[in-house]
Length: 420
Image (cartoon, rainbow, N blue to C red):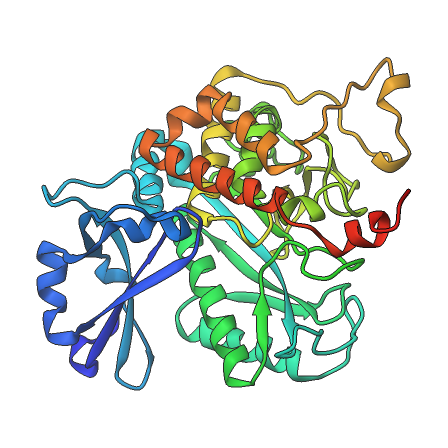
């Protein structure tokens, strides 16, 4: 833990309903007071762009997360409490903390590594370079990525590797596995550090799911396992690396709740330009081992261990809500003894579900409204989160979807302006 005597200012960081990070700066001398009593702030900031009402709330710093982030400035992660001193379940981080306390053994042993994809852009929005998948080219984009990785290592977050992705200016950072809350905190910090390093280089970083027309989308893949894996009882994998009954139910739970999870994993209108839009972005609810278009893929992670990879999410997802939803779905799968059926290993692009008699395939929601409908219809996911949190999330995203529908795009003008 960073020594408070070395700091003059401390940023109290929190995340709103939609996953955007915010902060309040305190003189370091007031940090102990904030840890004891909380620091006042306007809780309507939790509503992000949808904020309407002033709400007097308190930020409660997690002292174990205090970091020195350069010079005499510190950074600490916060949860939100009400004026009565009780946890405010409308806060995404508080929602995950509460859920972890309710889930018991699986939540305490769950770990996930993360593959975070993003684009590095010039100030005018053009890609910073034209590298290829796992290309060896060096450039300013790789400089941003490596500098961010070195800073993250200094903060105690292990980076397994970084590399060029398939799109121009597209990169990936792979984080080593972490427990649920630490993983969500690390993803927020990773995005913050990447943006800061890009700004220092006169560049931009975007975590949009698909920022460039006709180019690859960006995903956030989570490689999940349990601490007690590789045992024949209780773990997700047996000693030979095959899924146990619990492992199959874990997969089945996340597949069963995939329509509702889509609203958490693919959270905005742009997310659906990535889904259904390429060979490696899932569009259907299937699992497999070799199939890279599968929603869930069972294989090895970058840490060379067996893992269950969830491939639906994109980097715009609120990590606290995403991880909470995945845990709720997996826990239901295990407690209900669900089975995922046979793995699907063929190319989904060449598969016609209308002619299949042996492999029924469900599609994911094709737009944000459909995903929000599926979330509200999923009793397990609804019960996993506070009603105020879900209400703010759904209302805010519905407003975005409605605003998007009123836009006249260049595609429409090109196709219809002179139509008879």
